[in-house]
Image (cartoon, one colour):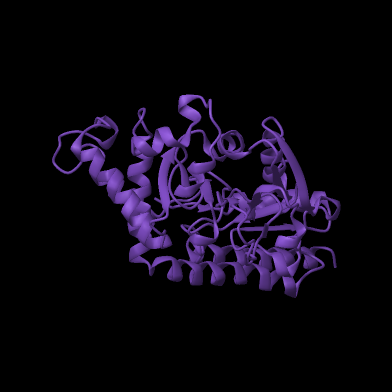
Length: 365
């Protein structure tokens, strides 16, 4: 079997070791005579899986006791509504930094529940960079600040996070959670879908500071109330049991590969392979993101014309490089190099890109 060079933006690559372990345990999980997919979510066996996933995530991300960890469903898209529904209070505004399509969607949903304000946006610059935002940028009546830490479509990423004082910061980290060291205590809420760095699709991670519940709105639907899921330990209704199991295996793999520090170092090396090549040949491979905002997770670039882009993508696919098409909304090319993408896969892509350019220049001579 030959594994594809998988650059899909999500669902994305999973570690081969994780897939092999899941394969081994698929029919008989730890002597139960059942698959994890067949276990009752109320069983001791699954409660152990859930506890293991929470413990590993807490240790890896150094999540303080001030925060709860929830495993929910509905993706980050449901959190776009659930957060303002719970925490956007009358007389306060939800402040949004708009850095791409997903932050625009989060803003759109928040408008259904109260007053919002865009405190910074890079839309006029085609979302090529992360704007400068400080606590002084925010209105006095800011209830919370919402940011999207990595923008998959445009290939931009927050490199660091300013101190916003007492303002609760809500961060959509769907596409870069666990990819680098983050001080969780700076955030009131961190959330994201699992399908890029943490496991298969179907699980949504929410890391929520407990004191937020003191300012929670009333009259909430049961399933959209964070308190419901905190009290039930994410087991109020049937959770995505197999997804949580896979997430636990991915976290174990991260531990075995140097923890978050080891993963970050490897991610930086992978990204450098591609960005260095593009900086060497900027007239042929042009990065979308400005240097100070380049993503370690999504390397986006354009080529001299659409015809050449189409040919590049066709030839790349024939060589086993999957998922290099840019998002349908902007075109171009995108290599999503999440945690589980091996460095060898990035090396192979860099070599292919260099060879493709040389072959093209020879053909037009």
